[in-house]
Length: 105
Image (cartoon, rainbow, N blue to C red; front, side, top):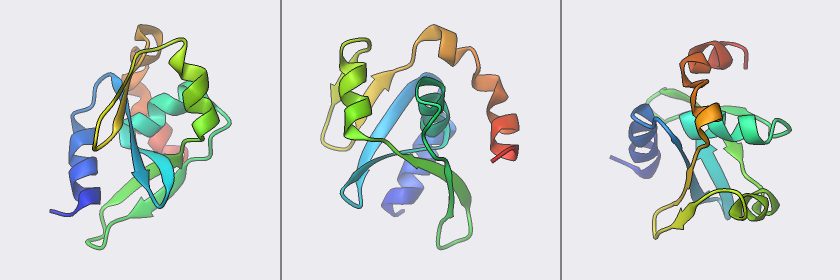
């Protein structure tokens, strides 16, 4: 399994986190992480992508300045693979609207 497949698999079960990955020298969020991030920063552009096997997904580029602005408000855990940010409960309550959001991109 390649890295994007691993990330997308993690996103399928993501219920309340924003996972940021360093890819292409930029912070990126995929799937539910991208969805949750756009609730915090509606100005972020959502981009469609697909794997070499044709699996469709969405992602955003997450500016470092946005990460710094979150550090005072939310818990962020930094690891070797990703940065993990706990989503506030009021944003997490919109999780069931993810499919409708995906259809409007």
